[in-house]
Length: 190
Image (cartoon, rainbow, N blue to C red):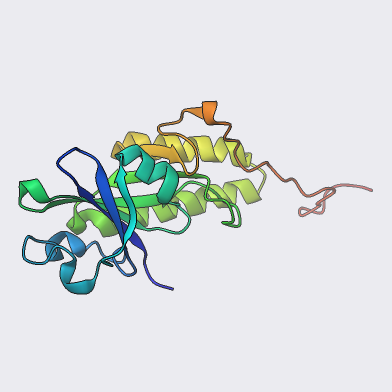
């Protein structure tokens, strides 16, 4: 399965060349492993390009499927291979066939576990509220996006769409599904 990540190397023209790492999303250790002497982290980053000469926004919308990737690294070779790590947060509750909405959160590897725990707990609690009928899926997703942005100053994007909540791209959240005649409490009369 792996813990997939994209690693984007900034070029002199401020565009990026993007590569893949199968295990780079696990613990964000690539921030310490990528260097001038080991630009591909001793083989942890694939040498073949996923994309070349693209903007940061296009990395997100065209390549960083939030359902499939766990991390994004932006590497600046001109700054002695400085590496900025981002955790990818998937903002959907669907089956994962369409990546949908995601957010990237800049994170220090030492703080990564706290971010992951917070996000998982928040999303799980919201899923429970959806399941109990307390919130619609759309309302829960809007709340989750707002919390991620408020708590972590993240960048929200639509895979295959736009950046930062620009809904002009035609993105529609996964529709709410309410089971017909679902009587879980047993207090309805037929």
